[in-house]
Length: 243
Image 1 (spheres, one colour):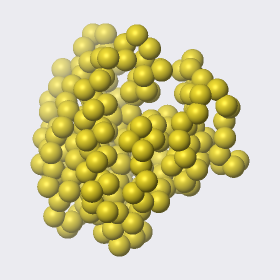
Image 2 (cartoon, helix red, strand yellow):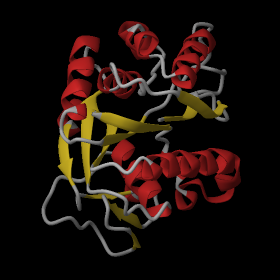
Image 3 (cartoon, helix red, strand yellow):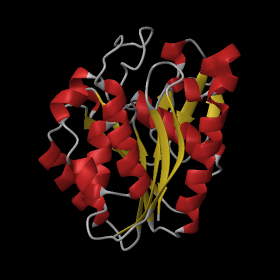
Image 4 (cartoon, helix red, strand yellow):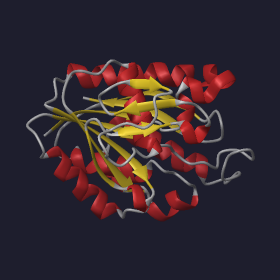
């Protein structure tokens, strides 16, 4: 049963070494992520599952100890799910597939928060996964242990300004506003109602992970709080805590 969830954005820029001189711009988002993870720890879960979007070839489950890296972004920072951050020691992780970027950011956040409250697992879902399958995946995750918590990694639209990765799209702000309301209110029906086709056009990589959360939280009676909302690079970033 799902007992808590944290929703965090997944840009590698959350990692200060990646952001470099721009690290301060996401300082409030990092603080909010730490607060959301504290809610997860306080829920006393038996299992924490990190959920993020990925390319089809990178989708699937990842075990505790799986390694990831930010070397593709030009910095020698490596992470392992549940086993800390290392600078300059190369990819590690007992031969497991490397974590995709969204899960690597999740692993970094967990290490930053010194997570030790429960065993870990991770799941990368394809960005194009249809809504029904997302909801079914969430229900399966919620049934994995008596007390399950989720760390859900995903961004909103990437079309909020002319300098955004997807340029300016007038549909982006309303889409993000609807997502923010749903996350703030722990409204599973509203999350499930997000249009997958529109999300794809707006490059909203969080749609599929959020809908996995919607499936996991069905009937759990959780309340929500929105801890951060912003679009500093023309991309919608949200932090929420459900408990």
